[in-house]
Image (tube, rainbow, N blue to C red; front, side, top):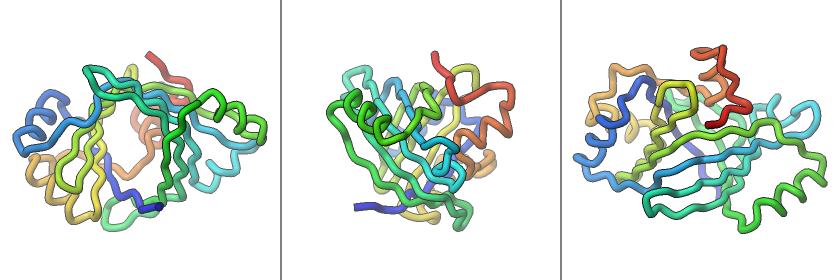
Length: 187
């Protein structure tokens, strides 16, 4: 079943403080590790030009967190109540090499291959990802069932004065860190 992804990014967070604050509210850590992303598109990037995304993501768990491999389609984004809203369809795959082979046979090319360190938490109907890419500051994504729940958790975490963004990671890098190419960024 596809459900809309409703999220924002919060810029300039201090990772140790935000993890402490999340735990104090009762959030449970659900992942810690390296995330490797491959984005696929056809020549001329028709998906990207329409604001769509097709991704293979490897989550390599550390500290006892499990690893998993996901494929994901995301539709064009809309901005509703200061949140990014997109159709998202996601599932796991067992053999990423075979998936990549099949997708290339269908005419898709790799358009992005990068890595980030991620720590994830959940609290009620909210999901938090603290992401750190090489050579750039950490930010946090908050995903919720609606904008109201996201606004409420921003209040509880004292993050209302922090810059919020509905940009994709690529758009964010182009605006804030134009000298860092997110496309092939790895540790």
